[in-house]
Image (cartoon, rainbow over all chains, first blue to last red; front, side, top):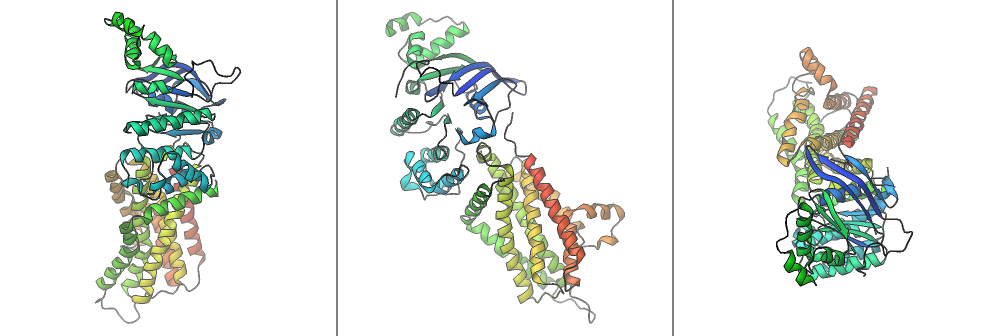
Length: 263
Length: 251
Protein backbone atom coordinates (compact mmCIF):
# COMPACT_ATOMS: atom_id res chain seq x y z
CA UNK A 1 0.00 0.00 0.00
CA UNK A 2 1.33 3.37 -0.90
CA UNK A 3 0.84 6.68 0.80
CA UNK A 4 2.17 8.52 -2.20
CA UNK A 5 0.77 11.83 -3.33
CA UNK A 6 -1.91 11.96 -6.00
CA UNK A 7 -0.47 12.32 -9.46
CA UNK A 8 2.18 9.68 -8.97
CA UNK A 9 0.00 7.06 -10.68
CA UNK A 10 0.92 5.63 -14.06
CA UNK A 11 0.72 8.46 -16.58
CA UNK A 12 -2.11 8.34 -19.08
CA UNK A 13 -4.36 6.41 -16.72
CA UNK A 14 -7.81 8.01 -16.90
CA UNK A 15 -9.34 8.96 -13.55
CA UNK A 16 -11.82 6.47 -12.08
CA UNK A 17 -14.11 9.30 -11.06
CA UNK A 18 -14.21 12.84 -12.36
CA UNK A 19 -16.62 15.43 -10.99
CA UNK A 20 -17.06 18.89 -12.42
CA UNK A 21 -19.04 21.77 -10.97
CA UNK A 22 -21.14 19.45 -8.87
CA UNK A 23 -24.18 21.14 -7.31
CA UNK A 24 -26.89 19.38 -5.31
CA UNK A 25 -29.83 21.25 -3.82
CA UNK A 26 -32.50 19.63 -1.69
CA UNK A 27 -35.46 21.95 -1.23
CA UNK A 28 -33.86 25.28 -0.43
CA UNK A 29 -30.83 23.67 1.14
CA UNK A 30 -27.61 23.70 -0.84
CA UNK A 31 -25.97 20.35 -0.10
CA UNK A 32 -23.08 20.55 -2.56
CA UNK A 33 -21.97 23.92 -3.88
CA UNK A 34 -19.68 23.37 -6.85
CA UNK A 35 -17.36 20.44 -6.24
CA UNK A 36 -14.58 19.47 -8.67
CA UNK A 37 -12.23 16.57 -8.19
CA UNK A 38 -10.75 13.49 -9.82
CA UNK A 39 -10.08 10.10 -8.26
CA UNK A 40 -7.21 7.93 -9.36
CA UNK A 41 -7.74 4.33 -10.39
CA UNK A 42 -6.53 1.67 -7.97
CA UNK A 43 -6.18 4.04 -5.03
CA UNK A 44 -8.00 4.65 -1.78
CA UNK A 45 -9.46 8.11 -1.64
CA UNK A 46 -10.69 9.32 1.71
CA UNK A 47 -13.71 11.60 1.90
CA UNK A 48 -13.46 13.52 5.12
CA UNK A 49 -15.51 16.18 6.73
CA UNK A 50 -17.81 16.87 9.63
CA UNK A 51 -21.25 15.28 9.58
CA UNK A 52 -23.63 17.30 7.44
CA UNK A 53 -20.84 18.41 5.12
CA UNK A 54 -22.33 16.58 2.12
CA UNK A 55 -20.24 13.38 2.15
CA UNK A 56 -23.16 11.02 1.63
CA UNK A 57 -24.69 13.19 -1.11
CA UNK A 58 -21.36 13.29 -2.90
CA UNK A 59 -21.11 9.50 -2.73
CA UNK A 60 -24.67 9.14 -3.97
CA UNK A 61 -23.76 11.35 -6.95
CA UNK A 62 -20.97 8.95 -7.88
CA UNK A 63 -23.20 5.90 -7.46
CA UNK A 64 -25.75 7.64 -9.66
CA UNK A 65 -28.71 7.63 -7.28
CA UNK A 66 -28.59 11.35 -6.51
CA UNK A 67 -30.32 13.84 -8.75
CA UNK A 68 -27.83 16.56 -9.68
CA UNK A 69 -28.81 20.22 -9.73
CA UNK A 70 -25.83 21.12 -11.91
CA UNK A 71 -22.49 19.73 -12.97
CA UNK A 72 -21.42 16.28 -14.07
CA UNK A 73 -19.87 13.12 -12.70
CA UNK A 74 -18.04 10.66 -14.89
CA UNK A 75 -17.38 7.19 -13.47
CA UNK A 76 -15.02 4.75 -15.19
CA UNK A 77 -15.38 6.83 -18.35
CA UNK A 78 -19.18 6.85 -18.37
CA UNK A 79 -21.70 9.32 -16.91
CA UNK A 80 -22.65 8.32 -13.35
CA UNK A 81 -25.87 6.32 -13.29
CA UNK A 82 -25.30 4.66 -16.68
CA UNK A 83 -26.93 1.19 -16.49
CA UNK A 84 -23.72 -0.65 -17.42
CA UNK A 85 -22.03 0.90 -14.37
CA UNK A 86 -24.31 -1.06 -12.04
CA UNK A 87 -22.04 -4.06 -12.62
CA UNK A 88 -18.90 -2.11 -11.79
CA UNK A 89 -19.81 0.11 -8.87
CA UNK A 90 -20.42 -1.23 -5.37
CA UNK A 91 -22.07 0.96 -2.74
CA UNK A 92 -22.24 0.35 0.99
CA UNK A 93 -24.57 2.78 2.71
CA UNK A 94 -23.87 4.11 6.17
CA UNK A 95 -26.79 2.25 7.76
CA UNK A 96 -26.30 -1.43 6.89
CA UNK A 97 -28.89 -2.27 4.23
CA UNK A 98 -29.38 -6.02 4.35
CA UNK A 99 -32.30 -8.32 5.04
CA UNK A 100 -32.28 -8.85 8.79
CA UNK A 101 -34.53 -11.92 8.62
CA UNK A 102 -32.14 -13.77 6.30
CA UNK A 103 -28.89 -15.53 7.09
CA UNK A 104 -25.56 -13.91 6.25
CA UNK A 105 -25.12 -16.37 3.40
CA UNK A 106 -28.61 -15.78 1.97
CA UNK A 107 -28.02 -12.03 1.93
CA UNK A 108 -24.69 -12.27 0.14
CA UNK A 109 -26.03 -14.91 -2.24
CA UNK A 110 -29.00 -12.73 -3.17
CA UNK A 111 -26.95 -9.62 -3.95
CA UNK A 112 -24.45 -11.86 -5.74
CA UNK A 113 -27.25 -13.25 -7.90
CA UNK A 114 -27.68 -9.78 -9.39
CA UNK A 115 -24.20 -10.18 -10.84
CA UNK A 116 -24.42 -13.87 -11.63
CA UNK A 117 -21.66 -14.88 -9.24
CA UNK A 118 -20.87 -18.46 -8.16
CA UNK A 119 -21.27 -20.08 -4.75
CA UNK A 120 -17.50 -19.85 -4.35
CA UNK A 121 -17.66 -16.07 -4.82
CA UNK A 122 -20.32 -15.87 -2.12
CA UNK A 123 -18.17 -17.85 0.29
CA UNK A 124 -15.16 -15.72 -0.56
CA UNK A 125 -17.00 -12.45 0.10
CA UNK A 126 -18.14 -13.77 3.48
CA UNK A 127 -14.60 -14.88 4.31
CA UNK A 128 -13.28 -11.47 3.26
CA UNK A 129 -15.19 -9.82 6.09
CA UNK A 130 -14.35 -12.62 8.54
CA UNK A 131 -17.86 -13.99 8.98
CA UNK A 132 -17.27 -17.59 7.79
CA UNK A 133 -18.27 -19.06 11.12
CA UNK A 134 -21.47 -17.01 11.23
CA UNK A 135 -22.54 -17.63 7.62
CA UNK A 136 -25.68 -19.49 8.61
CA UNK A 137 -26.68 -17.11 11.39
CA UNK A 138 -29.67 -14.89 10.98
CA UNK A 139 -28.41 -11.35 10.35
CA UNK A 140 -30.70 -9.90 13.01
CA UNK A 141 -28.90 -11.98 15.67
CA UNK A 142 -25.49 -10.51 14.91
CA UNK A 143 -23.70 -7.74 16.78
CA UNK A 144 -23.55 -4.23 15.31
CA UNK A 145 -20.07 -4.66 13.90
CA UNK A 146 -20.86 -8.05 12.36
CA UNK A 147 -24.04 -6.61 10.93
CA UNK A 148 -22.24 -3.85 9.07
CA UNK A 149 -19.73 -6.37 7.73
CA UNK A 150 -22.59 -8.34 6.16
CA UNK A 151 -23.51 -5.17 4.31
CA UNK A 152 -19.91 -4.86 3.13
CA UNK A 153 -19.80 -8.50 1.98
CA UNK A 154 -22.92 -7.88 -0.11
CA UNK A 155 -20.96 -5.22 -2.02
CA UNK A 156 -17.69 -7.20 -2.25
CA UNK A 157 -19.43 -10.22 -3.77
CA UNK A 158 -19.73 -8.56 -7.19
CA UNK A 159 -16.01 -7.63 -7.24
CA UNK A 160 -16.74 -4.02 -8.20
CA UNK A 161 -14.11 -1.92 -9.97
CA UNK A 162 -15.16 1.05 -7.88
CA UNK A 163 -16.25 0.60 -4.28
CA UNK A 164 -17.99 3.44 -2.46
CA UNK A 165 -18.05 2.99 1.31
CA UNK A 166 -19.97 5.36 3.54
CA UNK A 167 -18.40 5.32 7.02
CA UNK A 168 -17.60 1.59 6.93
CA UNK A 169 -15.61 1.56 10.15
CA UNK A 170 -18.15 3.24 12.44
CA UNK A 171 -18.85 1.10 15.48
CA UNK A 172 -16.02 -1.36 14.79
CA UNK A 173 -13.41 -2.15 17.39
CA UNK A 174 -9.79 -1.14 16.68
CA UNK A 175 -8.70 -4.65 15.70
CA UNK A 176 -11.47 -5.02 13.15
CA UNK A 177 -10.90 -1.53 11.86
CA UNK A 178 -7.23 -2.30 11.23
CA UNK A 179 -8.17 -5.56 9.48
CA UNK A 180 -10.66 -3.75 7.27
CA UNK A 181 -8.12 -1.12 6.25
CA UNK A 182 -5.68 -3.92 5.37
CA UNK A 183 -8.37 -5.46 3.21
CA UNK A 184 -9.05 -2.13 1.49
CA UNK A 185 -5.33 -1.71 0.84
CA UNK A 186 -5.12 -5.20 -0.68
CA UNK A 187 -8.09 -4.43 -2.88
CA UNK A 188 -6.54 -1.20 -4.08
CA UNK A 189 -3.32 -3.10 -4.79
CA UNK A 190 -5.36 -5.47 -6.96
CA UNK A 191 -6.71 -2.54 -8.96
CA UNK A 192 -9.96 -1.63 -7.20
CA UNK A 193 -10.64 2.05 -6.71
CA UNK A 194 -12.08 2.89 -3.30
CA UNK A 195 -13.78 5.94 -1.91
CA UNK A 196 -14.11 5.74 1.86
CA UNK A 197 -15.84 8.39 3.92
CA UNK A 198 -15.11 8.99 7.54
CA UNK A 199 -15.37 11.70 10.10
CA UNK A 200 -12.49 10.19 12.06
CA UNK A 201 -9.38 11.96 10.87
CA UNK A 202 -6.98 9.30 12.12
CA UNK A 203 -8.27 7.03 9.36
CA UNK A 204 -7.04 9.53 6.77
CA UNK A 205 -3.52 8.13 7.00
CA UNK A 206 -4.69 4.93 5.27
CA UNK A 207 -5.67 6.83 2.13
CA UNK A 208 -3.49 7.94 -0.73
CA UNK A 209 -5.60 10.98 -1.43
CA UNK A 210 -8.00 12.96 0.72
CA UNK A 211 -11.02 15.03 -0.20
CA UNK A 212 -11.76 17.51 2.56
CA UNK A 213 -15.38 18.54 2.45
CA UNK A 214 -17.05 21.21 4.52
CA UNK A 215 -20.49 22.75 4.12
CA UNK A 216 -20.81 21.47 0.57
CA UNK A 217 -17.49 22.86 -0.57
CA UNK A 218 -14.28 20.97 -1.31
CA UNK A 219 -11.66 22.64 0.90
CA UNK A 220 -8.77 20.69 -0.56
CA UNK A 221 -7.67 17.52 -2.28
CA UNK A 222 -4.31 16.40 -1.00
CA UNK A 223 -2.31 13.48 0.38
CA UNK A 224 -2.08 12.85 4.14
CA UNK A 225 1.52 14.14 4.05
CA UNK A 226 0.42 17.33 2.35
CA UNK A 227 -2.40 17.68 4.87
CA UNK A 228 -0.06 17.62 7.85
CA UNK A 229 2.25 20.02 6.06
CA UNK A 230 -0.47 22.49 5.10
CA UNK A 231 -2.17 22.14 8.47
CA UNK A 232 1.11 22.49 10.37
CA UNK A 233 0.48 19.38 12.48
CA UNK A 234 1.28 15.69 12.40
CA UNK A 235 -2.05 15.18 14.08
CA UNK A 236 -4.33 15.03 11.03
CA UNK A 237 -7.30 16.20 13.05
CA UNK A 238 -5.46 19.32 14.14
CA UNK A 239 -4.24 19.82 10.58
CA UNK A 240 -7.79 19.60 9.25
CA UNK A 241 -9.03 22.06 11.86
CA UNK A 242 -6.23 24.40 10.88
CA UNK A 243 -7.22 24.28 7.23
CA UNK A 244 -10.86 24.91 8.15
CA UNK A 245 -9.88 28.00 10.16
CA UNK A 246 -7.59 29.12 7.38
CA UNK A 247 -10.27 28.84 4.68
CA UNK A 248 -13.02 30.37 6.79
CA UNK A 249 -10.82 33.32 7.70
CA UNK A 250 -10.78 32.70 11.45
CA UNK A 251 -7.39 33.69 12.88
CA UNK A 252 -5.28 30.74 14.01
CA UNK A 253 -4.38 31.54 17.57
CA UNK A 254 -2.49 28.29 18.00
CA UNK A 255 -0.85 28.20 14.61
CA UNK A 256 2.50 29.38 15.90
CA UNK A 257 2.63 26.52 18.42
CA UNK A 258 1.53 24.02 15.88
CA UNK A 259 4.19 25.13 13.47
CA UNK A 260 6.76 24.41 16.11
CA UNK A 261 5.31 20.97 16.78
CA UNK A 262 5.22 20.12 13.12
CA UNK A 263 8.75 21.18 12.33
CA UNK B 1 -36.34 -8.84 -17.65
CA UNK B 2 -33.82 -11.33 -16.39
CA UNK B 3 -35.21 -14.67 -15.13
CA UNK B 4 -32.18 -15.29 -12.91
CA UNK B 5 -32.72 -12.06 -10.97
CA UNK B 6 -36.46 -12.58 -10.86
CA UNK B 7 -36.21 -16.12 -9.47
CA UNK B 8 -33.50 -15.03 -7.03
CA UNK B 9 -35.95 -12.41 -5.76
CA UNK B 10 -38.77 -14.95 -5.49
CA UNK B 11 -36.50 -17.29 -3.58
CA UNK B 12 -35.33 -14.51 -1.29
CA UNK B 13 -38.88 -13.38 -0.47
CA UNK B 14 -39.98 -16.96 0.25
CA UNK B 15 -36.84 -17.47 2.31
CA UNK B 16 -37.72 -14.41 4.40
CA UNK B 17 -41.24 -15.69 4.88
CA UNK B 18 -40.02 -19.19 5.76
CA UNK B 19 -38.16 -17.83 8.78
CA UNK B 20 -41.40 -16.26 9.99
CA UNK B 21 -43.33 -19.34 11.10
CA UNK B 22 -46.16 -17.37 12.61
CA UNK B 23 -46.93 -15.50 9.39
CA UNK B 24 -46.83 -18.74 7.40
CA UNK B 25 -49.25 -20.33 9.85
CA UNK B 26 -51.56 -17.32 9.67
CA UNK B 27 -51.52 -17.33 5.88
CA UNK B 28 -52.27 -21.05 5.67
CA UNK B 29 -54.74 -21.56 8.50
CA UNK B 30 -56.72 -18.35 9.01
CA UNK B 31 -58.77 -18.46 5.77
CA UNK B 32 -59.78 -22.06 6.46
CA UNK B 33 -60.78 -21.14 10.04
CA UNK B 34 -62.79 -18.13 8.89
CA UNK B 35 -64.49 -20.28 6.30
CA UNK B 36 -65.45 -22.66 9.09
CA UNK B 37 -66.94 -19.68 10.92
CA UNK B 38 -68.94 -18.69 7.85
CA UNK B 39 -70.24 -22.26 7.54
CA UNK B 40 -71.54 -22.35 11.12
CA UNK B 41 -72.95 -18.83 10.75
CA UNK B 42 -75.43 -20.15 8.20
CA UNK B 43 -75.75 -23.60 9.76
CA UNK B 44 -79.33 -23.15 11.00
CA UNK B 45 -80.82 -21.31 8.06
CA UNK B 46 -84.11 -22.71 6.82
CA UNK B 47 -84.28 -23.07 3.08
CA UNK B 48 -87.18 -23.77 0.74
CA UNK B 49 -86.55 -27.09 -1.00
CA UNK B 50 -84.22 -26.84 -3.98
CA UNK B 51 -82.90 -23.46 -2.86
CA UNK B 52 -79.05 -23.22 -2.65
CA UNK B 53 -77.42 -22.77 0.75
CA UNK B 54 -76.12 -19.27 1.52
CA UNK B 55 -72.78 -20.90 2.36
CA UNK B 56 -72.47 -22.09 -1.23
CA UNK B 57 -72.62 -18.50 -2.39
CA UNK B 58 -70.86 -16.62 0.44
CA UNK B 59 -68.29 -19.32 1.16
CA UNK B 60 -67.31 -19.38 -2.48
CA UNK B 61 -66.80 -15.60 -2.54
CA UNK B 62 -64.74 -15.85 0.63
CA UNK B 63 -62.37 -18.24 -1.14
CA UNK B 64 -61.46 -15.39 -3.47
CA UNK B 65 -61.59 -12.51 -1.00
CA UNK B 66 -59.27 -14.00 1.67
CA UNK B 67 -56.18 -14.30 -0.52
CA UNK B 68 -56.79 -10.79 -1.81
CA UNK B 69 -56.90 -9.27 1.69
CA UNK B 70 -54.07 -11.34 3.16
CA UNK B 71 -51.69 -10.82 0.25
CA UNK B 72 -52.42 -7.09 0.15
CA UNK B 73 -51.39 -6.78 3.79
CA UNK B 74 -48.37 -9.07 3.63
CA UNK B 75 -47.04 -7.42 0.48
CA UNK B 76 -47.54 -3.82 1.50
CA UNK B 77 -45.71 -4.37 4.79
CA UNK B 78 -42.89 -6.41 3.22
CA UNK B 79 -42.36 -3.85 0.47
CA UNK B 80 -42.53 -0.96 2.90
CA UNK B 81 -39.79 -2.63 4.95
CA UNK B 82 -37.76 -2.96 1.77
CA UNK B 83 -38.19 0.74 1.12
CA UNK B 84 -37.40 1.92 4.64
CA UNK B 85 -34.49 -0.44 5.39
CA UNK B 86 -32.45 0.87 2.47
CA UNK B 87 -32.35 -2.53 0.78
CA UNK B 88 -34.55 -1.25 -2.06
CA UNK B 89 -32.22 1.64 -2.79
CA UNK B 90 -29.31 -0.74 -2.64
CA UNK B 91 -30.99 -3.23 -4.96
CA UNK B 92 -31.64 -0.47 -7.46
CA UNK B 93 -27.89 0.26 -7.61
CA UNK B 94 -27.40 -3.32 -8.87
CA UNK B 95 -28.23 -4.48 -12.40
CA UNK B 96 -31.66 -5.78 -11.31
CA UNK B 97 -34.52 -4.58 -13.51
CA UNK B 98 -37.58 -3.14 -11.76
CA UNK B 99 -39.74 -5.77 -13.47
CA UNK B 100 -37.51 -8.54 -12.05
CA UNK B 101 -38.12 -7.19 -8.58
CA UNK B 102 -41.88 -6.70 -8.94
CA UNK B 103 -42.56 -9.96 -10.75
CA UNK B 104 -40.23 -11.75 -8.34
CA UNK B 105 -42.42 -10.49 -5.51
CA UNK B 106 -45.64 -11.29 -7.38
CA UNK B 107 -44.45 -14.84 -8.08
CA UNK B 108 -43.40 -15.50 -4.48
CA UNK B 109 -46.71 -14.37 -3.04
CA UNK B 110 -48.66 -16.14 -5.78
CA UNK B 111 -47.07 -19.38 -4.67
CA UNK B 112 -48.13 -18.65 -1.11
CA UNK B 113 -51.61 -17.69 -2.31
CA UNK B 114 -51.95 -20.89 -4.32
CA UNK B 115 -51.07 -22.95 -1.24
CA UNK B 116 -53.45 -20.89 0.88
CA UNK B 117 -56.38 -21.26 -1.49
CA UNK B 118 -55.67 -24.99 -1.93
CA UNK B 119 -56.10 -25.40 1.83
CA UNK B 120 -59.21 -23.21 1.97
CA UNK B 121 -60.79 -24.75 -1.12
CA UNK B 122 -60.11 -28.26 0.14
CA UNK B 123 -61.81 -27.41 3.44
CA UNK B 124 -64.78 -25.89 1.60
CA UNK B 125 -65.21 -28.91 -0.69
CA UNK B 126 -64.37 -31.84 1.52
CA UNK B 127 -65.46 -30.73 4.96
CA UNK B 128 -68.37 -28.45 4.19
CA UNK B 129 -69.41 -30.00 0.85
CA UNK B 130 -69.40 -26.75 -1.09
CA UNK B 131 -72.03 -27.34 -3.75
CA UNK B 132 -71.26 -25.56 -7.02
CA UNK B 133 -71.42 -26.77 -10.62
CA UNK B 134 -67.91 -25.80 -11.77
CA UNK B 135 -64.62 -27.47 -10.87
CA UNK B 136 -62.43 -26.53 -7.88
CA UNK B 137 -59.46 -25.95 -10.21
CA UNK B 138 -61.12 -22.82 -11.59
CA UNK B 139 -61.92 -21.60 -8.08
CA UNK B 140 -58.25 -21.89 -7.14
CA UNK B 141 -57.26 -20.13 -10.36
CA UNK B 142 -59.51 -17.15 -9.60
CA UNK B 143 -58.27 -17.12 -5.99
CA UNK B 144 -54.66 -16.95 -7.20
CA UNK B 145 -55.42 -14.12 -9.64
CA UNK B 146 -57.08 -12.30 -6.75
CA UNK B 147 -54.02 -12.86 -4.58
CA UNK B 148 -51.78 -11.43 -7.28
CA UNK B 149 -54.12 -8.44 -7.46
CA UNK B 150 -53.61 -8.02 -3.70
CA UNK B 151 -49.83 -8.25 -4.22
CA UNK B 152 -49.88 -5.66 -7.01
CA UNK B 153 -52.01 -3.21 -5.02
CA UNK B 154 -49.85 -3.79 -1.94
CA UNK B 155 -46.68 -3.03 -3.91
CA UNK B 156 -48.26 0.16 -5.22
CA UNK B 157 -49.73 1.34 -1.90
CA UNK B 158 -46.47 0.79 -0.03
CA UNK B 159 -45.09 3.76 -1.97
CA UNK B 160 -47.59 6.07 -0.29
CA UNK B 161 -46.95 4.94 3.27
CA UNK B 162 -44.00 6.00 5.38
CA UNK B 163 -44.61 3.68 8.30
CA UNK B 164 -46.10 0.24 8.75
CA UNK B 165 -48.91 1.90 10.68
CA UNK B 166 -49.83 3.98 7.64
CA UNK B 167 -49.54 0.95 5.37
CA UNK B 168 -52.17 -0.88 7.39
CA UNK B 169 -54.48 2.13 7.09
CA UNK B 170 -54.62 1.60 3.35
CA UNK B 171 -56.65 -1.52 3.90
CA UNK B 172 -59.93 0.30 4.69
CA UNK B 173 -59.27 2.59 1.73
CA UNK B 174 -58.31 0.07 -0.91
CA UNK B 175 -59.72 -3.27 0.19
CA UNK B 176 -62.98 -2.72 2.06
CA UNK B 177 -64.82 -0.70 -0.64
CA UNK B 178 -64.11 -3.52 -3.06
CA UNK B 179 -65.53 -6.10 -0.65
CA UNK B 180 -68.64 -3.97 -0.01
CA UNK B 181 -69.34 -3.35 -3.68
CA UNK B 182 -68.29 -6.64 -5.26
CA UNK B 183 -71.79 -8.14 -5.06
CA UNK B 184 -71.26 -10.16 -1.90
CA UNK B 185 -73.64 -8.15 0.29
CA UNK B 186 -76.03 -6.73 -2.29
CA UNK B 187 -76.43 -7.94 -5.86
CA UNK B 188 -74.84 -5.32 -8.05
CA UNK B 189 -77.95 -4.72 -10.17
CA UNK B 190 -79.80 -3.72 -7.01
CA UNK B 191 -77.34 -0.94 -6.16
CA UNK B 192 -78.01 2.69 -7.02
CA UNK B 193 -76.44 3.78 -10.28
CA UNK B 194 -73.51 5.59 -8.65
CA UNK B 195 -72.46 2.62 -6.52
CA UNK B 196 -73.03 0.23 -9.39
CA UNK B 197 -70.90 2.46 -11.61
CA UNK B 198 -68.08 2.34 -9.06
CA UNK B 199 -68.45 -1.40 -8.60
CA UNK B 200 -68.22 -1.87 -12.38
CA UNK B 201 -64.63 -0.68 -12.40
CA UNK B 202 -63.36 -2.29 -9.18
CA UNK B 203 -61.17 -5.34 -9.83
CA UNK B 204 -62.72 -7.57 -7.17
CA UNK B 205 -66.10 -7.27 -8.97
CA UNK B 206 -64.71 -9.23 -11.90
CA UNK B 207 -63.51 -12.08 -9.73
CA UNK B 208 -66.86 -12.35 -7.96
CA UNK B 209 -68.54 -12.39 -11.35
CA UNK B 210 -66.13 -15.11 -12.50
CA UNK B 211 -66.89 -17.17 -9.40
CA UNK B 212 -70.61 -16.88 -10.06
CA UNK B 213 -69.96 -18.17 -13.56
CA UNK B 214 -68.08 -21.12 -12.10
CA UNK B 215 -70.88 -21.78 -9.61
CA UNK B 216 -73.60 -21.78 -12.27
CA UNK B 217 -71.91 -23.71 -15.06
CA UNK B 218 -70.22 -27.11 -15.21
CA UNK B 219 -67.93 -25.95 -18.03
CA UNK B 220 -65.78 -22.82 -18.05
CA UNK B 221 -67.74 -20.05 -19.75
CA UNK B 222 -66.63 -17.33 -22.10
CA UNK B 223 -67.63 -14.74 -19.47
CA UNK B 224 -65.43 -16.40 -16.85
CA UNK B 225 -62.39 -16.29 -19.11
CA UNK B 226 -63.22 -12.70 -19.99
CA UNK B 227 -63.39 -11.77 -16.28
CA UNK B 228 -60.12 -13.57 -15.61
CA UNK B 229 -58.53 -11.78 -18.57
CA UNK B 230 -59.68 -8.37 -17.31
CA UNK B 231 -58.33 -9.18 -13.84
CA UNK B 232 -54.97 -10.16 -15.32
CA UNK B 233 -54.86 -6.94 -17.32
CA UNK B 234 -55.63 -4.91 -14.18
CA UNK B 235 -52.85 -6.74 -12.32
CA UNK B 236 -50.33 -5.91 -15.06
CA UNK B 237 -51.53 -2.30 -15.10
CA UNK B 238 -51.13 -1.94 -11.32
CA UNK B 239 -47.67 -3.56 -11.45
CA UNK B 240 -46.63 -1.07 -14.14
CA UNK B 241 -47.89 1.78 -11.93
CA UNK B 242 -45.97 0.26 -9.01
CA UNK B 243 -42.80 0.19 -11.11
CA UNK B 244 -43.06 3.98 -11.49
CA UNK B 245 -42.80 4.28 -7.72
CA UNK B 246 -39.40 2.54 -7.77
CA UNK B 247 -36.93 5.30 -8.52
CA UNK B 248 -33.27 4.70 -9.07
CA UNK B 249 -32.44 8.37 -8.73
CA UNK B 250 -33.87 10.57 -5.97
CA UNK B 251 -33.24 14.11 -4.83
